[in-house]
Structure formats: structure tokens, C-alpha cells
Amino acid sequence: MAQAKPKPSPAHEAQKFFFELGMAQRMKVGGELARLGLSFAQAHALRLLDPEEPLPMSALAERLFCDASNVTGIADRLEARGFVRRQSSEGDRRVKALTITPAGVRLRSRVMELMSQPPEAIAALSESDQRALRDILARAVEHLRADD
Image 1: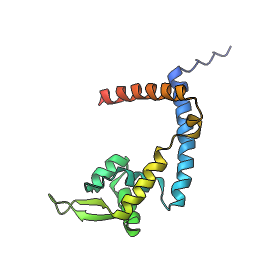
Image 2: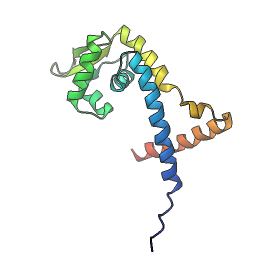
Image 3: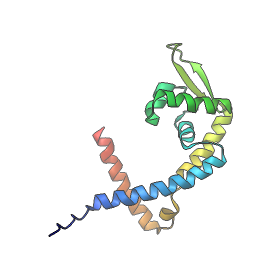
Image 4: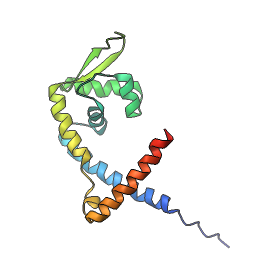
């Protein structure tokens, strides 16, 4: 006699939906980024760069959760298009930092706009459902931050 499969927890079901929404949104945004000539990683790097402060490439690699060699390729492509500039760090000339150029700041603004758009499926919810979802997610993020 076969054992009944345990019913997934509500948290597991929520994660399944969250993942599905996230992947659909990534595909949509990825297409729009491609029209700008950017990969998702390049766009995310631009998003993470502060126009007011150079960021060491090693710190960018940490924030992108990737190897430093990957950041070198991302920086090469962004630099070739005039969106970032490498410079030596003031404290250690061996450390290279990225500075975003004026053209990069303009593109970053567009990237931030694209990446902050809610998925259509969420935007289609009633305003009260959107508020409830926002509040629930805010509480989840509070738990995340409390664990840090």
C-alpha cells in the first residue's frame, strides 16, 4: 500500500508561487534589458553601483554573489560602452573600483525603473490585496534582517 504524500506546508506553497512570479518577471524584465543591450547581471551591477561612491570590484562580486572573474567580464562590457570607469582605490592602488559615468547614471535610472515594476499578476490584484501582500512580505523581510 502506497503512503500518502505529505501535504506541502503553506510556506512551501507560497515559495512555489513566489518563485513562479519571480521567474516570469525576470523573463519579462530580461527581454526589456536585452533591448537596452544589457544582460541581467550587467543591469544588476549598474543597480548596485552608487553614483556618489566608487565600489571596489571585490565588493561588487560579493553583492552579485559571483566570482571576481565574472565581475571583470561584466565591468569590461560596461566600460566598453562608457557606462562605468575603473579607477585605483585611494587606500590601495592595487584595488580597482568602479565609478559610474554620467551615461551610466542615465542608464541606471532606466534599469531601476524597469526592475522596480511589479509583476502584472500582482499589479492586477485589488489594492487591498496588494497592501496585504506588501505587509506580509515586509514582515518576512523583518525576520530576514533580524537573522543578520
